[in-house]
Length: 416
Image 1 (spheres, one colour):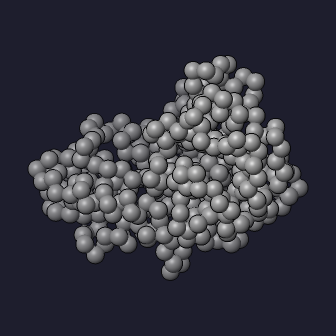
Image 2 (cartoon, rainbow, N blue to C red; image 1 turned 135 degrees about the vertical axis):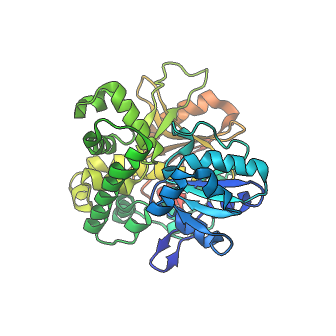
């Protein structure tokens, strides 16, 4: 597996196998994810010797693709087309080309926006295209692990983790996040400088390319507000009020950030036996390092004020789960649970068979029976479908807390 670059080192990317397989039987493969997460490095390392490479970040190439998309595509037999969201006009021309010649692997695309959600795309490539999501690096990739926590969890493979990371080292992992450029910077001030420039570039260029935005100056403020609300229930009116936007505008702008892979809604999970549920999605920032940079979180600040640790670690864990899900064999859906008694489960994973695993995140080295209250409710409502309920904690041992319940070290997320 190959992927994101750190100096001269290539990190193994779990999604590489999915891309390599898809290209053998599907005419169009799209590697979709945020800018600077390693998409170009991945596709060029896999296929650059086999096909020409065009990047639509090159202004001349972009102008040609926009002026004559049919002619641009007609000249291509097979190719890598990078940052295709900058010229969505190409997708219709690609559709026509593959309808004429359906050989697998003709077009390998990358995109830094959710192309299928763009209003300018009138026809999808359904049945002709496979989409592989690539997110920033998971800890398993950074540490060059070989397993996937999600596959092992659903298989019941609960063994003592290796590569233990605890205490200040765990906080440092969360503060760094998974963007290769941030992982490569040991100095937190240099990570923050990169993150600020990254956000500025996305707002000034990418946002305006995928949507008409009347209040562009408000976008950075909204993004900072979302960072402060990561892991909380999504309250559009509250967020809008904080920065002087109306509810409708806030909803649309948050949708834009979702399409650019900066934030993600996690929908609520529920079953009929459960009553008094809160059916509001949670919002999660998609990289804990970006969140830290936008909110001014540092190791020193968190050592003095532990109140910020919980939200950061919950975001970090959600990031890890969502990244692992992009190449998991199980490919579970990700939900959360909360009821009107304020009992909750941070993450509920459900596979295609309806089997469930619940995960609660605790930013402490101590776990008590009370920490399993929400997990017990979900277990009771789910019956045999409930396979495990784990409190992920800052410790080094797997400790049982009842039938199918255990305290599990956070390091299990990336243990080989």
